[in-house]
Amino acid sequence: MELRHLQHFVAVAEDRHFTRAAERLMVSQSGLSASVRALERELRAPLFVRTTRSVTLTEAGRALLVEAERILAQVRAAREAVAAVQGVLRGTLALGTEQCIAGVHVARLLAGFRRRHPDVEIRLRQAGSGALAEEVTAGRLDLAFAVRTRADTDQLRSVPLTSEPMTVLCHPSHPLAGRGPLTPEDLGGEAFVDFHPDWGPRRTTDAAFEQAGVHRTVTLEVNDVHSLLELVHEGLGVAVVPRHFGHKPEASTLVSLPVKDAAEYETVAMLPPHEATSPAARALMSLLTAAPEDTADTADAANASRAR
Image 1 (cartoon, rainbow, N blue to C red):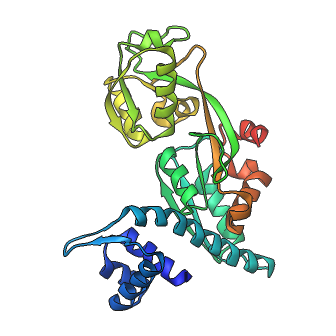
Image 2 (tube, rainbow, N blue to C red):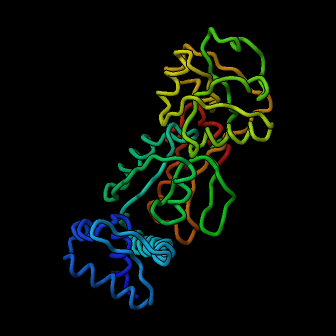
Image 3 (cartoon, rainbow, N blue to C red):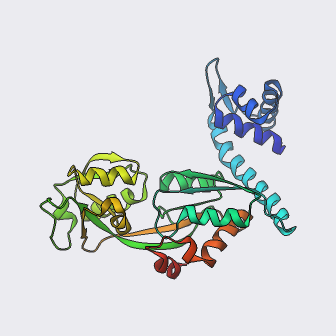
C-alpha cells in the first residue's frame, strides 16, 4: 500500500468529487482514478459509490478513511520531527479551538508562535468541542483548545488549562436579578439563550440540568458569544455561561448571578498520543506553558498556570 494511494483516497473522500480532488492535488483525473482503483484492488473492496452526480464512501471506505487520516498524520509528524532535529521547524500547525476559550489567549499565542517559527504554516478552525475531539483523533488537527468532552483514550489525551464555575446572565429588569445563588430548579421555567449542542458551555449546562432532573427550554440557539450576549441584553432569555463571559464589555450591563453547586467548566488542550504529536504542536504547548502571562487569557492566567 503506497502513501500516494492513501493521499489520493483521502482527497477524494474529503471533496466527494474526483475532478476537484485532482485539481487540488495537481494530478490528472485519470491518474487519480487509477490510483484509487489500485487501492481498491489491493484491499479487495470498493471504497466509493460513483454516480454521474456524486461520489460517496462505502462502508469499507468509511472504515479506511479513519485509519488513512491517522497514518498520514503520523507520517507528517515523522517528517517534521526529522526537520526539527535538524534545527528547523517547518510544516503545518493545524489548530482547532472553541470561541472565547478560557485559559489561553489564542490570537496572542499564535502571534508569539509565528514570531518564533515563521516557516510553519498556521491553520485555524473554530468548532464545537465534540467535533474538535473527533478531528484530533482522526489526525486532521494537531491539537485543539476545547472543553473536556470525554475521558482520555489511546488516541486522544488532554492537558488541563483551567476550570471555572458557570454563572447565569440576565437583564437587570429580570425577576431573577439580585437573587442569591440559583439552582437548576430556580431556572426550570425560564427561556434560555444558548449555543448549539456541540459547544462546550452548552454541553456543561445540559449535563448539569440533566443531573438535577430539571427540563429547560433553549428557545434561541446561536453560534457566537456576541449574539448570545446581545439577545440576553434585549431581555429575550437568560444564559448559563462560563464566568469569564461576564467580564466581556458586551456583558457590562447584564447581571451575573452565581449558581449553587455549579458544574465546573473545564477547558483543556486536546492532543494525539505523545508519539504522534507533531513538533509544531509540542512547540506551541511549550510556548503556552513557558509564558502564561503572554499567552493565557488575562482573566484566568493564574488559574491556567496552576492547572498546568
